[in-house]
Image 1: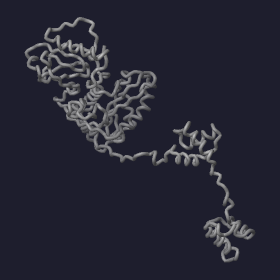
Image 2 (image 1 turned 180 degrees about the horizontal axis):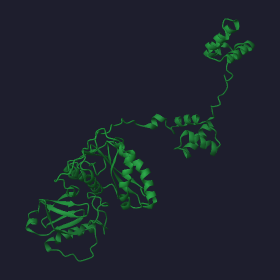
Image 3 (image 1 turned 180 degrees about the vertical axis):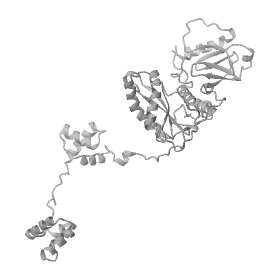
Length: 432
């Protein structure tokens, strides 16, 4: 081995040891120059005196690295990872390869192989986009985050259902919780009405882009870009703001994760197995949760506004649709034919737009100029089991509906434009 193959560090050691051997340097000075302990300097000096410069060359020079595994081993390990451990991290995958398949590969070696093969991503790529945190609002009632969480809240004791969560942005305080069948307009009508009766009107609700809160199709409902829930809040002078991402409403998203852990266990311990019992249990749970996790607001002012005399919640939280009253005093709504009782007032509404007001409790009114008109109904989705008694002038319209129902085949769902009625009680729209 010639000096040409020595590394820079080895050449530096050679110069220092020459000076030490010739007496130009002391052992202490050589130790300081080399950054080694006195014992190591003496060991190197002895080896240099016995074998010359070759004693300073690393014994590992020219040997095959123990980490250079054969190509067959690498291919075998990666095949097993793809087949059985695709979602495993390098550490756990290396353990399984060793324990189950007797393949001994270091975790860092396996990590490198998985990165090269695209089976694993480094920490920076896994972390994804970093969102700038948004500061809390200053006052209670300034911004209320709203979301629905579908989950097996009662585990195997009942079917899955949805928990509607209202949380204050300024304090992370749970303002209202309610179990419902689904995240529907009528469910939000009922829950929001209870919220307003308990706390008053906030400045704004902060939601996602669920169809209850935002018309996601161009030229949707009434063409004005406003949903039934949005119309109800506008009537009450409450703003609704839709977040662009789930991260933007992170407080309610994090609260959902906490609730899916803590609330499920508390319901189990309390022996609660139904939505009704769960809703009765929620107030005490909310009080305990807020004691543990709620924060103090930056400003003690409460921005909830009291309900005004003109704020009629029963009227605001209704599903409303407009129809044109025909010459035979009939109209269709959600595949039901409504026949208005003849009167002088009803005659004045012929050819005009009348309003169908669908209440969460199942009541339904047909109004013209704010006045309700009595009616009878014929459901074209139900089978006719009795002889229909109807005036001759309405017979044509009824026969047309029956023909359309027969052409459409067996009874099916209601119209797609109608409301979802799982959370509406005592309504007339059951399918026969």
